[in-house]
Length: 160
Image (cartoon, rainbow, N blue to C red):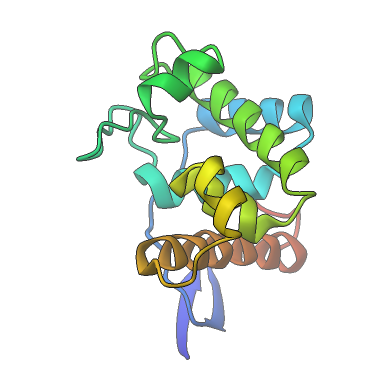
């Protein structure tokens, strides 16, 4: 366990802080779609932090695009016809997470695994722990999510 300073608060958690911070506009978009699709806003923030480190022009080696690193088919399926537009990308990613939340009864471990590996594989395998990439992804999202929740509970006025 190491000590970290995030948002001026020294904490001891087995995680790291990237130092990246969303713009006020992007943060407002995340909050709006979290409310609209009834998904935890801290989960959306955590997914974006892990997926793209807040780079709206990010492209993964596998072809995932934008802030929430949507695959082109997923982007189209959920209405992001310009996946580099933060509004469309976050709206589509939040809708997809809402679908996964329903499909996996709110189990954030399975939701994040499905977001990363695809819902078919997670539904079929119930998160195959032999896949170290999926396990590492789930762990990273969970750690970012827990940090955001801790900061919200600890800092005056919550977090950004």
